[in-house]
Amino acid sequence: MNTIKYKKVILVTGGAGFIGSNFLLTLVPEYPEHLFVNVDALTYAGNLANLKEVEQCPNYRFEKTDISDLQQVQALFKKYPVTHVVNFAAESHVDRSISGPLPFVHTNVLGTVHLLQCALEAWKDDFAGKLFYQVSTDEVYGSLHTEDPAFTELHSYDPHSPYSASKAGADHFVRAYHDTFGLPTVISNCSNNYGPWQFPEKLIPLVISNILHQRPIPIYGDGKQVRDWLYVIDHVRAIEQIIKARKVGETYNIGGHNELQNIELVKLLITSVDRLLGHPEGHSLPLIHYVKDRPGHDTRYAIDARKIHRELDWHPTVTVQEGLQKTVCWYLNNQEWLQYTTSGDYQMYYTEQYQNR
Image (tube, rainbow, N blue to C red; front, side, top):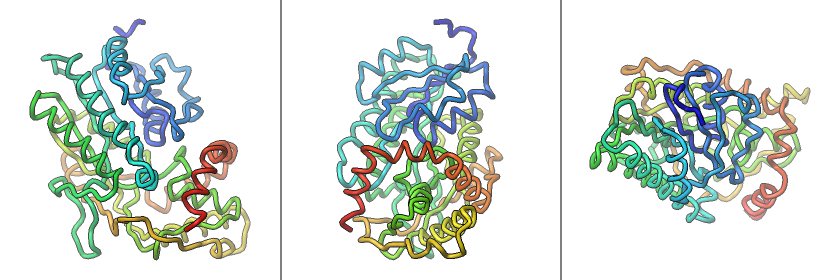
């Protein structure tokens, strides 16, 4: 396999998932001089159909690989002269981590350590131009009260769910490999993403799907949990800037400055979807169904992204109003994809998760 002609060989783990797909769909066509190797185990949320637009691009490859299997990861680093790792791969749904934490440990912690160790061995003492990029979450910081200032990069980790604990553990290993072995690493912690190709266990596509099918919209507790929302392509552009800057050992918070209560967000979505479907105003509001709150549910997340604004001149470009409109239109125009992803195993999970609450 001729990889000599490429300036960078970028291993993109979790590239068939939500953020990974958007990263590849955006950057593969824009950087023909770089080889992008999509590494994904294709578990329930990984979907290669997301990537039809780039699968024929000469600078794109796919490798079905489980990063929790060390031998499989070693084989990747032997096959490709990897210069960059962008680690999106993660079990990422909090509810699933509560019902079954072990897969989160295997993929999010052990998988990350396998990637770190293989990168260290492959790059040895030649770290020039290399980078290990850990894509993380604001959930590792824990929960804020209403009056608390937003999370900065100096905020201590305080994870409350098995998911956020597994991401925190992975982040600590990334920093340890930098501090101990000099591995060139960078970490970003991002707020809630939304946009095309998101698996419908997450709030926004779940709400859209349930309005389409006129099914109850489950709202945890009183629905007043606050999240900061960022359109996924803005996240992709932030990652792009961080890779280009290659400020080794740094951490960047990425946020959209769009704090909304969950119930506020749901009502905005209902208004948008009902209007586009030709329903009268308020038609789907009765679908709102309050269910028992999630154990250990964090009250508020908020990101202070001034560091990335200041150092890398990155700023979100899509307002929450624009982003939600784009997202709703995408799901309404891709109902076949939505139908496919909500069949089979997902239906079983959905019933178990919400039916008896």
